[in-house]
Image 1 (cartoon, one colour):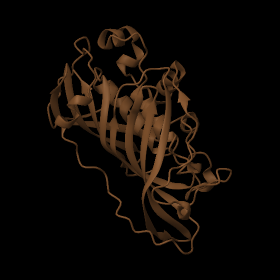
Image 2 (image 1 turned 30 degrees about the horizontal axis):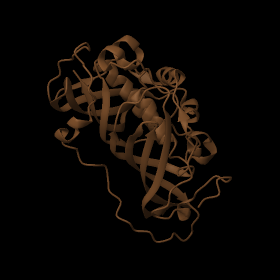
Image 3 (image 1 turned 180 degrees about the vertical axis):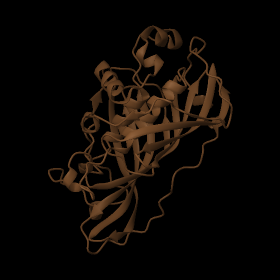
Image 4 (image 1 turned 90 degrees about the vertical axis):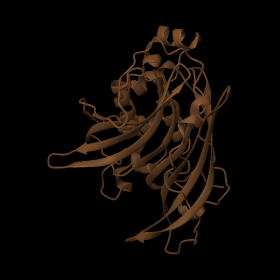
Length: 323
């Protein structure tokens, strides 16, 4: 379908129903957990504490950070987004099971819909809606959808006008109870948190190692590597990098977080650049008993802190499992 020797595909090259050429599978190792921790500061307890994971799960293996799994799944979709102008959102994310180190991840990316966008100056572009499934050695791992704004050749766009959905509606927590693993969370710390209560993380953090993170996860989007491909001449930070820092913040605020089960969505509502200072605020929206813990729906807002302004750049709505 595409000539992978060129920096493409452009918007006009996409066909609904087509499957993108795959990027290399990756076999997860402890190096992936360590690199992800170095980039994001994620404190996922069952990832960092091997005896705690063995006690909770009964497994002699090592848990892969769900963030590592998701970011490789995202990166393996980016054969489609080499010419991305921006990623608009992720939706309907389902983590189907925990993944242990040693599993090999493979991702399939399918074009679900196309919609022309109005040109911006001499920049021609269109929306591309993608469906993604990542599988490991023991079967499917994660499924999700994403929508990206892709550069076109122009000046005439192909006239695509598919109905592309926006961010997904909240999934009833009761529909996700069967997704929690048969683990014993009694040894993990609980965190009292009232429904509707918002807690800003007092530990702000800055973005660095953005290009290494993109390379680590096979991210092919040129705007994350080459500053000459961006509108303002600054290299655009991969939006998932901001989400990774948000998850790291949530592991500090909710230290007993055992597993990420789903995302209602992840909306990149503003760009990020290397060196930006970020603050995250976490609001507990809903809680439901599930297994030996609780499913907890959060709304997480990421805010860029500038000398004279505060700008929200991320709205992430995860559902996690914790005591």
